[in-house]
Image (tube, rainbow over all chains, first blue to last red; front, side, top):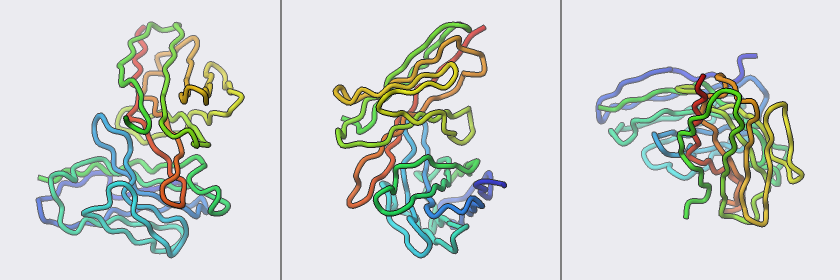
Amino acid sequence: NAGVTQTPKFQVLKTGQSMTLQCAQDMNHNSMYWYRQDPGMGLRLIYYSASEGTTDKGEVPNGYNVSRLNKREFSLRLESAAPSQTSVYFCASTYHRDRTTFGLREQYFGPGTRLTVT
Amino acid sequence: RKEVEQDPGPFNVPEGATVAFNCTYSNSASQSFFWYRQDCRKEPKLLMSVYSSGNEDGRFTAQLNRASQYISLLIRDSKLSDSATYLCVVNMMAGSNYQLIWGAGTKLIIKP
């Protein structure tokens, strides 16, 4: 099993450019997440998808959109990149039995995408 | 007050020593607690879940103190390979769902 995979690993964008970060998991998890990590700060949730067909905003959703393409894949799109979006982006997945256990279990992470916006 | 707080360190510790650090959380209704380890420029990986009764995994011991709202991580006989950033994670209600809230991490450097 590959676990959680992310592409690309590195990306440099100019202000105003757009791009999509791809994430896929092969662990049959139903929940997937996008985080950003900035120096000196904890991981901050951008968007999450509790199950196929649903997406919800996290703590810092502005400037981002997501698509839960199927159970395996969850993409993050930056429509018009800004320097404030320079960060390391992690995708994660987990399994939750039902709504009452959502957010209570270990998350498995991809290797991250290092994004620089100039 | 931050929802989950950690001393950022770095903790500089000689090899073989015992080191402990805490993580405080603000929501008394939190149910799940975890310690993750993150190596430099890598993704976080689960180190231990933290149970109410405390739990031990080899050289690592995690404790939960609900009255004072903190969790702790103790590392005995520290190894050079223990050098990493340790992230505390706590679940909290966000709307009608639980979410995991991440601390900023404690950096540990083990010196030979």
